[in-house]
Length: 336
Picture (cartoon, rainbow, N blue to C red):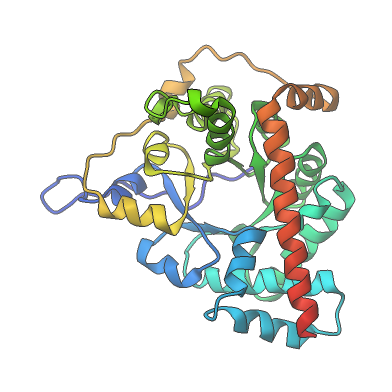
C-alpha cells in the first residue's frame, strides 16, 4: 500500500501570530514544496522537502562548469561498463548530491526510450534503486520516475508491490491518473504548463489569457479534477502538480499534496508577500458528487486516444526526453 506523503510541513506563523511574509512560506503551510531542478546548489535557499529531475534537467546540468566533474568522474570510474549502466550511474550521482540537500525524496527517471517496454522499465528501475541502496540510501528516499503510458503504469504497479515507490510523469489526462490510482502508485505528476501550452497554441489568436488564468487555466483544472477525485474516492496516490509557467498556476493549486516548482518560480514566490489562500481541500473534495470510474487496457487506450491534447503531449514529451537521453549518451561516449 502507498505510504502517506512524506515530510508534512506544519503551518508556519510569525512570533506575532501573523502568517509568514512570503508566499513560499505560506504555500509550505499546506503543500509539500518540491524543487524541479538538477541544480542542487540552488536548492538550499528554498528549503524544499523533495526534488525531482528529468533527462532534460540532467543534460542541462552536466553541461554546466559546476557539475561537469560529476559526469567526468562517473564516466572515468565506470568507463568499461555498458553505456546504459554508466547513464544510470550518472543519474544516481546527481540524486545522491541532491539528497545531501533535501530531507525527503529525489525522483530519478528511467530512460524515456523504454516508455513502451514494461520489462525493460522494470529492469532499469530495479537497477537504479539497487545503485541508491548500494550507496546507503533507503528506498523511501527515492521515487522512480516513469512515463504514464499503459506499459509504464504496469511496470510501476509491479515495482510498488516490491516496495520500490514510483512517480508517474508525463501525465496529461484523467484516465492516466485513474489508472495510476488503481495500480497503487505512490505519486503522480500531472503537468500543468504543458496542458496550458497546448490549449493556448490551439486557440491561436482567439486565446484570452485573462479568461484562462487562475482556476480557469486548463492545466489547473486538470490537476484540480484529479486531486478532487482521488480525495473523494479515498485513493492514497499523492498528487504533485508539475510543469508550471507562472506563479498564478501555483497559487491556484495551493493545497495540492505536492507541487514541484522550478527555481525561477520558487524565487518569485519567495519575493512576494501577498496573502496566499488554500485553493484545494481534501475535506471539501469528499463532499463532491464524483462517481467512481475504472479503466482496463482497452478503455484506457481509447480514452487517451479521444483526448487530443493528452495524446499529443504524451508523445511529444517522450520524444523530447528520449532525444535528451540520446544526447547524454553521446556526451558519455565522448568521454570514454
